[in-house]
Length: 329
Image 1 (cartoon, one colour):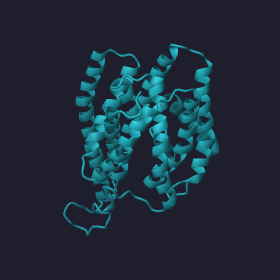
Image 2 (cartoon, helix red, strand yellow):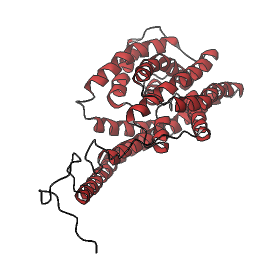
Image 3 (cartoon, rainbow, N blue to C red):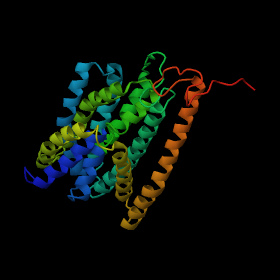
């Protein structure tokens, strides 16, 4: 591969914009793009994407470290599990001497990782809906106090090991898997801490996986360089327009893209992929509209019970849209 490829630059730019716009991890988008659009060998695509991420992750991590939005205990125990798993997973794959079977293994691993990433994206959207459509109104979740985050080393190390193995084999997981699991394990963790912790722990994780691939000679630095010079300004552009773009629609499109890419990597024929895309486009949107309406009804009912308006302020008795709680029956 040439050291500079304009088509790769454009692809990196597009992925960077989507990442900046939605916060979606680049690995879940970049690697399938390299495999499907540019016909890059899956192993080389994974390795090159990891090298690219190695230069992108520290910028965001430094910002969060300066702002103090990083849970360093979580970072420590995640790193204990993820770094050896990422490095060892890549080395073990090479040590097995699978030959031509290596690409098949990588394709199946990448397909599973993409489906997990899609499930995680849907869960995050649902979780955010539940939080923001709380009794205090959109964007104002109910919190009586700041709960203490209790870090238990054993489950965190196991999470790090699983994510490290995924990242080493597929380049997907440093954000897609860890963020979702942390959200389930620590629902009280602030959004800024969630993102900051994930970015900081991803630096040593990606470094270990990238180092293993570089040692094995898998990475193509021409691909990595072209992607990098496109992805960095793309991420900046996406972040700038994120407040104006319909992020929910973009995320739904990403979920469909990830599912279709995942089942394609698992060997599904093109017709099945197209049918799956159509079903998700229609039924998925209908299901999401139903979930939103149900959440809105519950939030409105809860506001009436508490006697508060959408901003969390206590409403006067008899105010329009509010009724005083009736006697218990």
